[in-house]
Image (cartoon, rainbow over all chains, first blue to last red; front, side, top):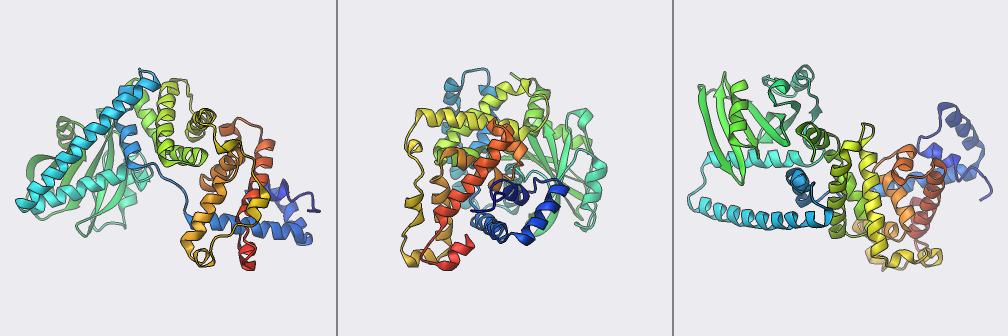
Length: 247
Length: 176
């Protein structure tokens, strides 16, 4: 190592941390210093080899669930004892899993209807969205931002409304593919819960809301003005019913 | 306990960085299951400290807590971390040639190489290369001056390059 810039300036340049003047100055230096040029190439390949290997570790689903569902329950107690409710939750999850497995076997025997398959898919889509970074393709509480975002991405215009004043803040929107067709999903907050409202066009006449619960999630389905709506959440059914009335 | 307004703020500002929290913990303690416990604990702490968080960069704020939780854990579970990095050892890794050829081996070697770095080097690599943090953010998260961040990063990269260098394949040296 003969060039004294290989340690600081080179890395700062590589990391885009130099101001424009400094960067230009270093680029001039690069044309003259073979050592820095070679080191820069090595840093670039190190970075690309890290990118290619995809070693970023996302939070496991169990952790995400705990984080979303049980933070407020355990905050007033100390960290050490706070672990216990989570252990209890793990047990509850196991019981739930068992129940779901049982439900699946039952539903197999009863030849699950098309409706429940759809409900499952929508619940899955909702769960996927809860993974960090997947909540919304367009994150905005402004209906005038979210609505135009859907244009050109869908062959219909979903009704996009913000109900912040009424306790259902719009958080954004995203596209989901359910049963082979692309549909709109609006994301609302409800206290600490997240509600997905899936919307797609239908030729069926308007229909009163119909509720169901699968895998511990509530769904509420209704049809209005040529649109099919499904609201899915782990919040109380009464919340979904309120939201339905707002549309 | 947070009121409902703060809970929503926490949910919107902090929870989106759960992956970042877990990823940093996973690389600092080098174990998925332990990282899960630590991320949980850090999240609980951040939730309790949240009333004291007055805006700003929520990711850095959370990662700072995660990092402190990790170091407390490392201190308690002091193991190989005290062993000094041995450049000689990493200059001549010798996995079998056929294994070297496949892509998954590149990944495994990279993981081993990063895990072989001392914790202060692991964290700057993870924060810069995986999390895409700026020097200023890394300085905040690690509670150290920017100069320290820069020198740690440059030394960490050098050690990582050495750990990855494979003398049996010329192009590999170039590539890495």
